[in-house]
Length: 577
Image (cartoon, rainbow, N blue to C red; front, side, top):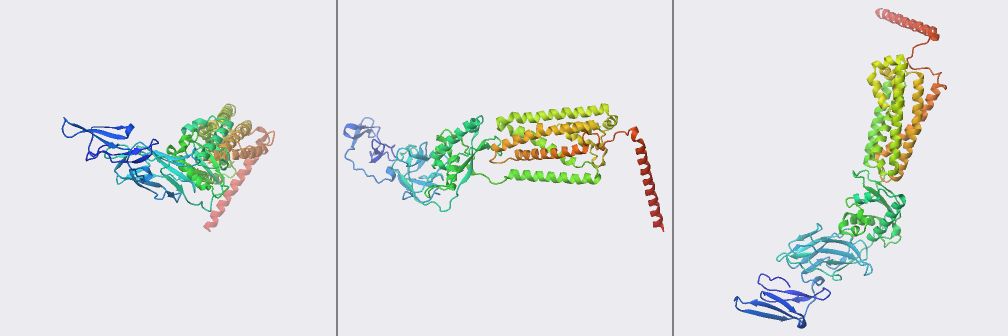
């Protein structure tokens, strides 16, 4: 029974025991103080006074002989009509339906829900939300627009029905809940054909939220396989799609573009076996809609699918290098070009110097920076690689630092020429000793004679050079090779979307191994085992046995200089003439 209207008249409607609308009761013509229903004789009675507090009147209305009409839209006398008018959904792109009421209404807490009919018992929920959600709107006080997700009517030639809870909307005038629509009263059917062109198959990405990422972070490989298989089972029921079209790829990685490093899962959607089955692109669109609206779909009703990130949805796996990789490639290419320019500059200044050390030094520093970045930001993503990554970073740093410090200190106290050079280049030696923690081979820079600068003419002994050689050779096996293997293992798991640091760290580690093997092989030939026949490029003092040869060389140089002076004088005379 409704509240009295502005003329103090009461009315109502009849419902069956099943809650279905069974007709309209026009009610009393005046307001009643008290009303009730006598079930044994189907009589409605009310008590009222006629503007006199001393007199009361009881009025009755017999209900059992009423003739009811059932021509109301969806058995609801408050609904004038709904769209689509003919109850047929002709396009998968339908984005809203409209309900027209016969009175001004406001939203309330009841839900409107759409189901797909499967077998009458296990009907499939497609979407549900309340009137107060952000998916509804009121037009002209009496019409309600209902948003339809793209995943809702996703099957052609299928049957659906709409249920509206009592209290989905309320009367604006009385703020009383308005009755809804029961199951079976509002049916809809889809009618369209699948497109002729379909993607044969597709690979997509979905992402776990914080809860899901935390849930599987410590999973073993077998536990993850179970999780992935169960999640695919849930999604095949929710979409719905044949389970065979969701093969187990088992690939996952942390999202390189997400600061919280949520886990990405890769899904493969195979081509349909029948023309009546949804195309791969439609499955992707449906899954994306289901996830993004998961609070209003079945995604939130299943335990594993509820851990999917609604802010990510489902996207096709990017092909090729992403923008982050492209920008990094441009950056590294620019850096390489800069190093090449520096190489030609120093080579022009002194072609006889060990100018190739420019490349070696740059590669060592780049590899060292990438190794540190990998351990800080990426290694912890795979617990089994975290400890080895730290060990093969810290261990070589300690080894190279101790060896570099030992070589410098021994030379300072046992090699007088080096000690004199050291006193004038203390800051430079300190810098390169610290940098040598990346690779002791960096100490070769101070003996390289680069650009004929005195800073790079350190007169170290052959013994020190041999120690640097063997220390750098050992680095190949205690640092470069283990880190190369760790990068491969990391990228085998995180091979969905490549991130610049692990990729370029792998490349730099591979180049370092190749560069070190070639460089150490060249050094071994250059030193000529047992490392005593090398023509030294250092500045050690001459021995007594070589004094005669050195004196002859000095006389030859003086003679050349005199000849050059005489030629200059002759040129001057010719110019005067």
